[in-house]
Image (cartoon, rainbow, N blue to C red):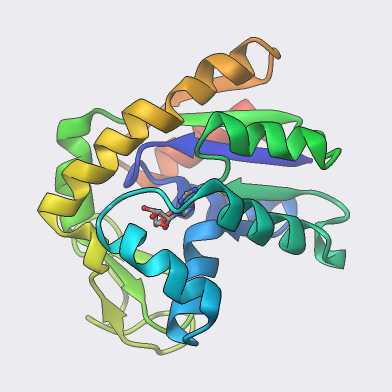
Length: 212
Ligand code: AMP
């Protein structure tokens, strides 16, 4: 099953993708994680993306389209995948079509902007593997240490309040129109993000058609 998870920054796409990819045994592909990894490794692509990312702006389409094309060509995507954070613009969605990628469903996780600000301020990510935590809603077993790999948990630079405002603006202007784009194709399912992660996961699995 080829899935897209849509939603504002901090709506819980990454966390839900982690839960659902385990249930369906398909990989999650996060363009944000790929860019952060490239940045850590000092690659040319990472350096090109850095200024956009730090400012809370979207990275230019041609860069992220190149990333996704390369990633989707890998063997582990043959039985399906979850795209977390791609597409974020109509041209990116059109690029998927041109690549001949057929999307089965698009899950939109809907969370109000006020709630986003609160969630994002408590978010922590693993500096090694990219796993995502929240100091209140999804704490790691040992404070500051990743459950999965033992890496150090940090706050993302772009999770600081001023940058979050810019990211939400980009979301409303450039990403939200994708809802109508996929609605017109009959692929959109909207889920109301819940306070408890597990409650949202239940709704997402139902929307995906994979609930027990
Ligand atoms: P995320 O981890 O998905 O919140 O992404 C973090 C940042 O990476 C975004 O704020 C953008 O600067 C950049 N980014 C990730 N995915 C995309 C995309 N599909 N299009 C443009 N920029 C992206």
